[in-house]
Each structure stands twice: as C-alpha cells, then as structure tokens.
Image 1 (tube, rainbow, N blue to C red):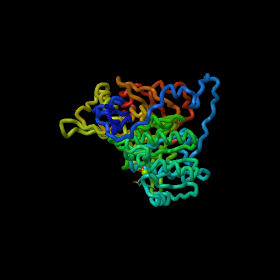
Image 2 (image 1 turned 180 degrees about the horizontal axis):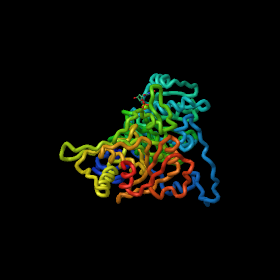
Image 3 (image 1 turned 90 degrees about the vertical axis):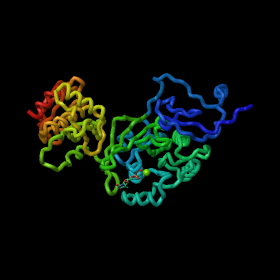
Length: 460
Ligand code: TYD
Ligand code: MG
C-alpha cells in the first residue's frame, strides 16, 4: 500500500532545519524546544541529477581566478551617512538586506525616513503591518514627503510582484517579512516555511532584476516564531537595529555583510520628529552636565569600526544584604564582568566576593570592545573605595587573567580622540605606543602594565 503523503513537518524556529517528526533538540543547531509543527504542501518532485546534466539550464563555466574581472558593485547611496556606512557604502544593486530588531525599536521609522529623502529613485514600500494612513502619519511626523515613494499594504507575495511590475521601482522594501505569505504554501504568514519561501523568492527577484530588496524582520528576546534567524544565510547582509527602549539612543550594526565590513556601526537618537544621526558619538558622554566628581564613574575611549568615541561606565559596589551577592550588568557581558571581579580578588586583593556589584554602560549602549575592561575595573574599584576618578581622566586597555593590561588596537586614534575632546589624562597599556609621536598632544599619557599600577595612578 502506498504511504500517505506527509501533510505536516516540524521546523526549528532558530535555524530553520526541518524534521518529519517532533524532536526535543534540533539535530542541526542543537537548540532545545525550538521545533514547531507546520502544514506543508507536498513537495514537487526533485529534478533528477540526469535532468540537470542534460544541458537545458544555462551552465556556469569555471574560470581561473586571475581571468575574472574585478568590478565594483554598483551601489545606491542612501541619503543617510550612518546607514550608508553600515551597508559598506550604499545599497548594492541586486542585493537583499535584512534589517532585524525588536518590535517598536524604530526599524520602520529608519527605513521610511531614509527613503523619503531619496530624490532620484523610485521606491516601493510594501507594508503588511500598517495601513497607508498610518505610514502617512509617520511621514508627517518625520516631516518628509516624496513623490517617488509608493506605499502599498499587501500581504500576498504574488500580488507584491504585480505591484512591482506596475510601479517599476528602483528599491523594494518589505515591512515585515513575517507578515508576507505566498499562495503556494498553505501554512500561515510568519511560519518558518513561509518566511523562508518568501525570502528565497524575493532573493531570486533581486538577483534577476538587479533591484535591491530591503526586508524588515522582527526578533524578540525569546526567539520568536520564525525569527529572521532562519534567513541569515539566505540574505546578503543582516543589519540589526538595537537599543534600550528606556533610552533614546539606537545602534545600527551589521552582523553579516557580503559587501562590506561588519565592524561599522551607525548611531541614532530617537527624537520627537524621527531619528537623528549622531555623527559625534562622544556627545553621549559629553552631555553629562554635573560638575561634581562621583565615585564609580569612569570614562573609556572605545572604538567601533574605525570611529573612536568616549563612553561612560558606571559601577556600584555595596555590601550584600542577603547571603548571595547580586551581580547585575547592563550593556556589558556578565561573564566578562565576573572574570574581571575574580581578577580583582585574586591579583589585587580586593574582597568583592561578599559585595553586590551593579554595572551600567551609559546611554543604554552595548559595546563589544575588549578595551573596555580597564574602565570597568576602574569604575568598580572607584565605587569600592568610594573615591572619584579625576574628571579629565579616561582609559583604554584589555585586562588579562593574571591582572596584566594588554595592548589594544588603534591606540593612536583613541588617544587623539581623547585629546581632541579636551581630556587631560589617559591610561593606556604599556608598550602599546610603539613609536607613535605624542609630542604635539596636550593630553598626559600614563602607561600601566598591571591592574595594581592603574589603581595607583588613579587613586594615588
Ligand atoms: P517603529 O519604527 O514603528 O518601530 P518598528 O518598526 O521597529 O516596530 O518605531 C516606533 C517607536 O518609535 C514608537 O514607540 C514611537 C517612536 N517614535 C518616536 O519616538 N519618534 C518618531 O518620530 C517616530 C516616527 C516614532
Ligand atoms: Mg514597523
């Protein structure tokens, strides 16, 4: 007897792997409890290997690498410089870019605002989430309008292609990929198979037509149903828009980029009338308007991509009220903080094991620069001994397990930035300067090789 055709499959919401039956642990990515059941249409018969060799399809010809011409990817430069930089210089023609982020963080605002400023390109903005009136209200709030941006509310993939044929846009935006469904599958919009299928179809469209497609996707902290994670290997670039809802600052970060670097970030501030580009990130720190010196506050010179800027680290160390001390961290890796606390305990002799430690990076930012270690240690020490660090002081350095301070990248840029902003003293890892000429800088440079030296420099 012929076996009944399979009607449902199980999909992993974290990597998109499929399985004919439920499993507790995804065999592909190893995550637990991520499988969801979805209805699928019977798969079309796979073309046989012999069929694909019979020469009906255009074949690619292998060529020696030195015979291949290197051509610059043609790009559309977007009106916003921050957005351009994160993309690696603009939107590459025929590319597909995913912009992910938590709901309400400002993805739609960012895209709408950038594209409304376009004077020369036609844009089709497909929204499956908001009505055209809502988008118009948002555009009014941002204070921009354009005759080149076409808005359509649509959730069926096949209809989107009709709208594209009608408008003939230069750029297509789909907000969001989780609301779009193709008629060829009968699972609901937002399911793993729909998200994957729609993205793959839009990818083919982008490659064939040369029209760049910008997909917006939601992720939530628990890892949503069909989060954009399943798309990461399909698309050319994955950008993430992140920030703390309590703060106005937002970071645009490239997680993957086939056409540029992933170390660049764009910084924005959410204002009453749209997002404002923060071209001088140190203002986040410099806007501090207290003159008094506070203990537990230190200033770090950090670097994201090629841009140095200053950020403030705040720590509070207090005697634990309960048996188990609390450790709470915002904007920094909690494991790394525990490591630094262990270094302080073992190498410098500070007994922090019975203390509550709270750490916070100002502005709600999350920075991945290892050179932040020294400022984290300094703020913890400052709070522990209740002595303020001098107002003109800043620092940069990575801390190793034996309490040594290790060299950091691009020290010249960091020192020059601190000097430019009028700081008076900087702590840097010893031996890091390597012949950099500091004679025309007015900032005093203190080289330290161990955490204990840093403590002595800061608190005498
Ligand atoms: P939105 O772009 O809708 O987020 P997403 O598309 O990521 O879900 O942003 C919504 C938030 O931004 C909302 O809470 C209101 C706020 N906002 C402002 O503060 N100022 C503005 O000018 C706009 C347009 C939105
Ligand atoms: Mg939105």
